[in-house]
Every structure is written in structure tokens, then in C-alpha cells.
Amino acid sequence: MALVPLVPVGSPRAQLVDDRMYRENRSAIGEREEQLAARRREVAAGWGPKYIDRVHQKGKLTARERVAALVDAESRVFEVGTFVNYGQTYGDNDLRCPGAGVVTAFARVEGRWCMVIANDNTVASGSWWPKTPEKIERAQTMALRLRVPTIYLVDCSGLFLPEQSRSFPGATGAGHIFKKNSELSAAGVPQLAGVFGDCIAGGGYMPIISDRVYMTERAYMVIAGAALIKGAKSQTITSLDIGGPEVHVHASGCADARVPDDETLIDALRAEVRRLPSSGADFHRHGTQSIAPLYPSDELAGLLSPDQRVAYAAEEVLARLCDQSLLWEVMPERGHEVIVGVGRVGGLYAGFVANRQGLIEDPMAPGQPKPAATLYRDGIAKIAAFSRACNDDGIPLIWLQDIAGFDVGAEAEARGLLGYGSSLIYSNSTNDVPMFTVLLRKASGAGYYAMAGLPYDPVVQLSTCIARQSVMEGRTLAIATYRTKLDDDFEIVAQDEEERARIVDGMNKVAAKIDADMDPYVSARQMDTDEIVTFGELRGYLEALVEASYQNPGYRRIKNPRIWSLHDLSALTRLGAR
Image (cartoon, rainbow, N blue to C red):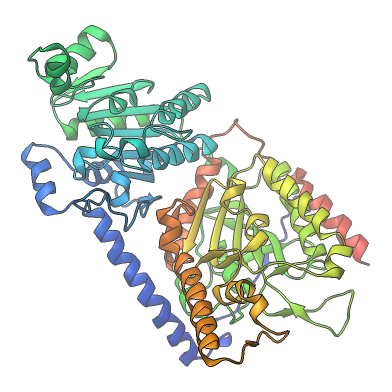
């Protein structure tokens, strides 16, 4: 029973698609992934070379230079929220705030995964724009869910005042950051702060609840800066005099230590992380190590078509994400529209839920295949049971979405899909185990919710460059919008040529708008997804997230494989299938 029956899945690429189709898919997806790389560079540049030079002239590092110096050598930084506010402009001068003026990322520091939050001091001196507070709060929530240390690299001039009405008030306004600080502290999550420069108003509050606060000689923390003091009290005094390290390290006690420069502060933060307990991930690997999949992950960009109507084998995705391309599929006899099972990612167990594509056989209607990528009764029940078992066993869940929605119609309602769907929603809503969601292609309708979409609180939701979130596709919505103008075959009823032209034009505009809204950059800009990634990056992101799930023992249930509920579930369902 202790044996986890992992078996090989997947096939060599040449057996799946011919060279021509593989090249066509890679070319189409490659163009989008090149665009992703270019847009990442655009965001990373902040407000450009002139502002980077200004930072350097002050003897300081930029936010991304600080992050690079903080993380372990040869370690990849996994950014989240890169494209928040992407393409948005503000004010009469069409100002932009790349990345909402803050870098948030999972990064390995002294062998421990941490959440790093760094104000981008090349964008309006690191000030907070619309959605900047929400982006910071989202990162803090990720850290809280995984109990990973949180490191603030603070260089923040407070709210970007011309847009204060869109970032100050409301349930997720700037002040909510400090509530998250408090929740992290209450949960015992270590928080470290390095104050590198301006730290005004809300920027001054952000580090205070941290367990350790370091300041450079150029840094200050103030409720109000020198200009405001002069206006309010007619006092001429520098911000350093008001709240520099001389005040906060030696008088107020609001900071713990002063250091000469950025580099020394970063060394001090690394030393603090080194004092924390080391990761528990190796213990939970049970003597194994990370082993690459048998089939390269970057092949996914050639196996999947950007046309969501073209099918592929979901097993091939799993074969390119799981260690050694090994998977234990659970309950394979039921709910063929989905695959549920357990594999290792980076040597650690994770549960997978993936939507099958193409056509599947319906055991209740032999000889009448039906479309996969849709949830039917047995599949919904299967996912709910698997989700509950993984939660009971403490196995992180990875959801691989490529879903068109729920089954509909009289038969679906008679078979109780609403009730089964409610059971799945309840399971996912009450899970304590970390869940991570990947939108591979389509994420449509209530199926997006059922497969642990962002409204159901996965720790992180990733989207590929070809992911599309919507209630329905643009053409379908255009038909629904103009349904009264169409016959039963969805052909235009009107005979007048001008009226027909107006209907065609209207339907095309509706479809085009919906298609534009489904762009993953729109989702990322609005924080409807956490990050856009390439297919080749998926495995790396998942390795980092799964390891972070196992890093800190004691805060959630993690059972050893001898006592997994999954073994019981598997045995009982096999018995029931005989």
C-alpha cells in the first residue's frame, strides 16, 4: 500500500504529430512567446535608461538589481504580476507604470523560497499607482498561503498622488497592505525589510511590522516628508533629519540596524534568511531527487495548437511536466473527460487534474462519443473526490485547464449536474492544501471556476501565451447577442441587403471585442491571472511552487504515502468497477 504506483505516460514527439504540424505549432506559439520576452524586457526597463542612470548617480541599485543581488547564484527568479497595468496610461501626459511600479517574485535565498516585494525606483521613485497595492497584497497572500519568508525591498515615495483616488480608498486600497503585514506576522511568517531610500507615508508604514528592519544611510521613513512639513508647519528640515537612520535606529527603535549602502543591506538580509529554519522539502522527498521528464517540456509548444479546436492528448502534457514522465492515474475507469493522478515534480508529490481533448466514449451511451474538454457528471464527481483526498493527504494540487465548460441540456440537468458541480465547488472552496492553476488554452464558462480558476483562490494562476478566459467564444456570443435575427441554423433571417450587412457588421464587432478581451495580457493587466509564461517555463514554475508548498513543515497536514486516503479511494473505485 505504501507503494505509489507511478507508471510511464507519454510518447516520443515523433509518434504524436508529424514534423510539419509540429513546426507550424512551434512557429505560431513561438511568435507569441517572442512577444512575451519583448514585453517582459519593456516592463523590466521601467521608465528607461535615463531613470536607471538617475538611480545609479545616487549610488543606489535599481529594484531588479537588488533582487538579482539578493537571490542565490544560478537561481531563477519567478516573477508574478509582471503585466499588471500593462498598456494602461494615466493623466494628460499618458504616463505608464510598468509592472504597477513594483516587482513581486518567488526567489530562492540561502536555499529557501521567499516572496520578494521590491518597489521599482525607476518608476516615479517607486510610488504606488492604481493596482500597485493590490499587486503587493496578492504577493503577500501567496506568501501567507505558503508560509514563505517575505522580503520587502523598500524605496517608495508613497502614493502617486495624481491617481490617489484609485489606489487609496476601498477594500484593497493601500492601507490593506498593512493588514496583510499584520496577518503574516500573526501567522508567524518571517518578514524582513530593507529600506533603501524614500519611504514616505504608506511607504513608511510598510516595513514597520517586519521582524527585522535595516536602513541605509540614504534611507528615511516618515509619515510626512520635508516638503509637507514645510507647508504644514513652516519648518525647514530634511527628510533624513525627520526620519533617517539616526532617528529610527538610535531614537525611535522603528528600525534595527543601519548599514552604509545597498550591497551591505542585501548581505544583511541574506544573513537573516540564513538564520531561519532550512527547508523541509528534502524530508518530504523521501530520499528521491528531482529528475527531469523523459520528454522535454519545451516540446509542448509544438504539441499544442493555438487553435483551441485542435485536440491533443492530455497525457502528453503530464508526461512533459512530471518527473521521469511517471504518473499514478487514479479512478481511470470513470469520468474519461478528465485525468486525475499523482506525480512527482522536483522530487515532491503533487496531484494533477487535466482536461482531456477530442472525443470520449460515454459508458452510459456506448457507441455515441461526446466531446471532451467538457465536464459531465462522472468527471465532476471524480474531480471532487480526488480534490478532497489530496487535501486530506496534504498533496498540493495542480490544475491544467483547457476546458469549454459544463455539459448542458435536459439530460445534464436530469443527471444532477448542478448538484455535483456544487459538491466540487465546495471541495475546492474549503481546501487547505496549496493549489496552483495553469490555463493552457481555453478557460471557459463555469468550467473555469470548477477547475480552480482564480475566483477559487489558487495560490498562483499561470497562463500560457495562448490562454483565453471567457464565458464563451466571440462567435458564440455574437450568435447569442443577435439570436432574434437568426433562424434555427443561425442564418440571418432578414432579406434586406442593408439590414443583413448591419447584422453581419454587428456580429463581427461583438466577436472581435470578445476575442480582444480574451487576450492573456488583458487578463494579466486586470490581475485576472497572475503571470504569463512560456510552455518551456511551466515545469520550472511548478517545481518552485511545489517545493515552496513543502518548505515549511508544521503549518498544514502532510501525510506520508503509507496512510494516504488516495490508496483507499483507488482500491474502492477499482472494486466498484469490477
